[in-house]
Image: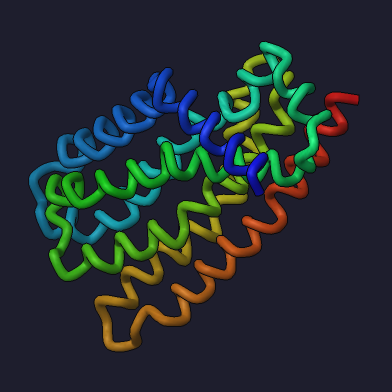
Length: 221
């Protein structure tokens, strides 16, 4: 556990010290949401209706921008091989890296969402459920993204390949995240959708590090 926490603190320190990936993700999130009203026009009812979907899609794309650096940096400077040979199993190494990505990227994007919701005329009653779905669903974004980052860590132009691999994995999270918000505003309640969204995140917490570790192990030889 000490090794896990040390690696987690190291990756968080690198993420916040460099700041480029986090800043790019946050900036992209703001730009995409801010441009949406300009493209759709001044219809406030339309903006309010599509706001949850727009915010979720923009968040997924923004988080995707910082995924290539999840493993690539350590591979370039040789520290990945040293970490892989250390006492911590490679599965826990990948779990620590994915968790660091969620803390450094997923949480800031989620916290920024209420302010951006104002640009889309989002119903105030939808804010609690929107934040709940993002808190529950964004771990899946990071842990599933770790699989794509591991598979493409030595590929040229890995960003495009990473998007092709990872975006299909995000579809269930997107569907049930938006479904929970819509259900929460209706008489049916959001319970089933939230439970499924939580199950997706729990499954990603387990399967993501295992698949990512297998991909890294295969490329390290």
